[in-house]
Length: 113
Image 1 (cartoon, rainbow, N blue to C red):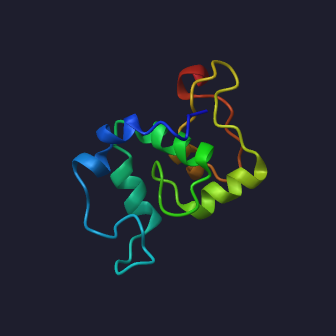
Image 2 (cartoon, rainbow, N blue to C red):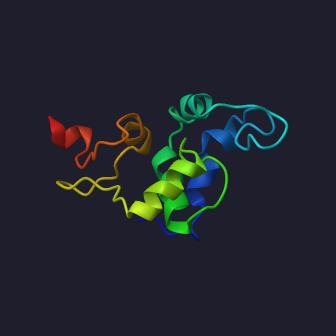
């Protein structure tokens, strides 16, 4: 799991280098943004998995991290969900897990083939 005190990954984050409109990641402010819009924006971020790992390790209380909304992360934390491949220990893609809600994904794409 990521070290919650290590933020070096953030300098390469898409939201740092190509930020969206103000309030994009915090929909309780002035803008109305859907989970799908955020997931789409974050899907091409080079450090999306690091961002997600950070949010889970630090138990970030608000906002979107790695394209995943706070409500989904809180649910996964309560469940004690693991986000590493059962075969190779590589991080699992949280957006892929969200698409298969209700179904436990325990292997990465590489190990499924």
